[in-house]
Amino acid sequence: MKLYTLIPFLFFLSNSFAQPISEKPKNEIGVYNTFQFANRNNPEVTPQFWLKTKKVYCEARYNYEDSNTLSLYFGKPIELSKKKDIELIPMIGGVIGISNGLSIAFSFQTETNNFTSSTQCNYFINKNSNSNNYLFDWSSITYKISKIIGVGGGLQITIPENNYAIIKSGPMASLSFNNFTIEMYGYNLWEKEKTFSIGLEYSFKK
Image (cartoon, rainbow, N blue to C red; front, side, top):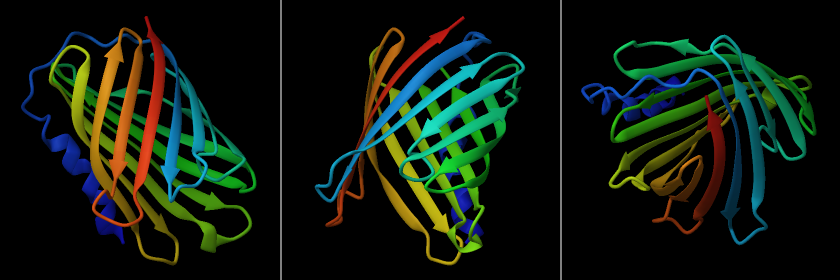
């Protein structure tokens, strides 16, 4: 089961020889709202809100760990490279709602002139039943073909405590306008049960 957790890090190897960009702003506030469609059901809406300074990271998520569930995370940004824009944010969070418990998480991002890669990974510990624990990872890599257009791929892995891993992967495209970004994903397009996701992000950096 642990072998699947290594897959997302393959995304980051493609950036190891890329040229660095200018220094990243230290303060950031943003919101990311995901609309995910599967099996012709109503879309799952997952809003995320974050606040980041040089020393502190705070994030709120809704419908992320489970439906009608709120989670609050606290962490610390760690700059892993002075020459390249590589950042790790370890976090711990509390989860309340339909599911209750503790979540141990991290995010990892790299950014260069043309490439951007990111992953969000968390292990949810259910307060009421260990059988409902799971590991979830959402990773993506994007290559900028122009100032506003990016193309790449996305990967989602869910590993329940006592079950097989669920893997979704597929192409993605993005459009960026100043502080606003639209991301579009198509997962498992070669299978009968396809999943489509649209992400809307607005962030302000200083």
